[in-house]
Length: 274
Ligand SMILES: Nc1ncnc2c1ncn2[C@@H]1O[C@H](COP(=O)(O)OP(=O)(O)OP(=O)(O)O)[C@@H](O)[C@H]1O
Image (cartoon, rainbow, N blue to C red; front, top):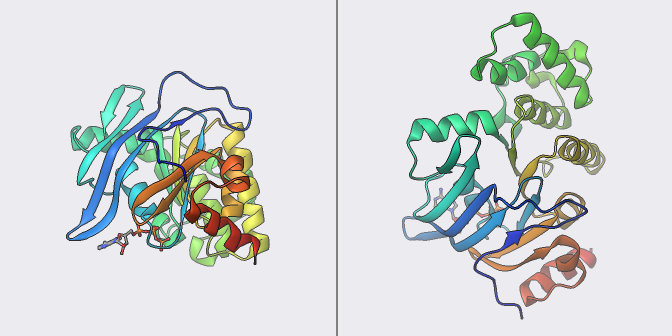
């Protein structure tokens, strides 16, 4: 059985070069909801260009951890430090205005349910353009051109720019959410089960687009998934969570091909037996 390491360097994976400066450093993070434990004792370091997968069964604390590191949930204790262009930002203790600005300009969040990440009755172009405007762009023609360009990058016809997401399929909504998040050139993207509500064939297309964009844009990403195939496809390294704690961590291929912790072995074998 492997002993969970207190600090994990999410470093070399799938051909990426190891950067010397951490982008995100999480130290002894704990989140409780009243008496209910969300997650505890979580520590890791993430470097630019890396994709970290968080896997585990339902209720193991994946979304709680993602919420805390992405500034959506206040941690109960511990530290989440992000190295922003302007310097280090403590996601819990730095001034709220600074944290909000860093989230808006350097991070993106793709929600499991597109309804949480899109404005369903605003046009696709408006959904994408809104992010640019929030970051100071004012030229309407330029914003529309960029929105159309991004629609095509996520394989949505540019002539759907004036349609609302309420008229899009689930896969299109998810791709629109990705475009909305990436148009501002974020450095770090958080994704919570981005393909879990989609049919298998639609999932494959969304995953393929995500994988290409992550590589093209040298994005760093934290992705929560219960689907080990998604983790295998996208993540360089994995954290395996159970009951709020990390029970195993390491390179994705290593963990999936040679799991050490009995819980990870069970998780991997339950997928293989299907
Ligand atoms: N708002 C909340 N209030 C109380 N308890 C919560 C809340 N959100 C999560 N929890 C609890 O925290 C623990 C971790 O939940 P979390 O949603 O982070 O797990 P998860 O691994 O993301 O699960 P799933 O895959 O089902 O989304 C669970 O015991 C859950 O019941």
